[in-house]
Image (cartoon, rainbow over all chains, first blue to last red):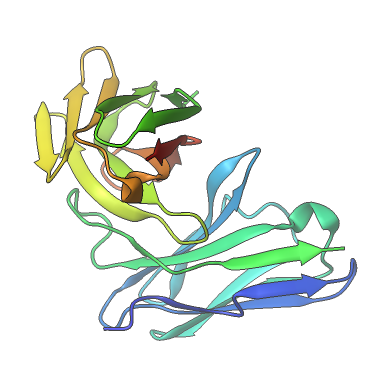
Length: 116
Length: 112
């Protein structure tokens, strides 16, 4: 298995532009997570899906952020308009049966976003 | 407030030496605790998951301990190798279906 796939790996954009991050989870996994990591705040959960349905989006910082999962093999995280403080590494992770205590989340390589 | 605190923030050791990383949490009710290893420029990789009933769990040269009474966990690395250089993140899951609370990690550097 190729693992969790994210694209692009790096993104540099100007303030005000729309940014779309993409994720392909591991086949067969029914949970998908979006995280943001910064030096100051560490890893933060933004939103997670179960069977393509958003379950908890309380970590989404504001209305500029939106996430979709149109099917079991694809998800997007969109920032519109982007701001410099959105600069971070965004990780996508997937797992099978997240509610089970022993389940591991598998992380993608991340997208490093820089907003100028 | 549910929090996970890790110490030290960073650590430098010589190859072959042992080290112990600490994790204190205030998460309640507690479901499980995980240790992740994150190499520079990569996503975190799970090392171990422990429930409240488990005191010790090993994964090769990594041994995690958990004291659910004092809400403390440690990750002990034996005979360190250069490839152990990474950030180690402690993650606590609260409730049975709840979210994960992440520590900010300990950055370990193993020098030859």
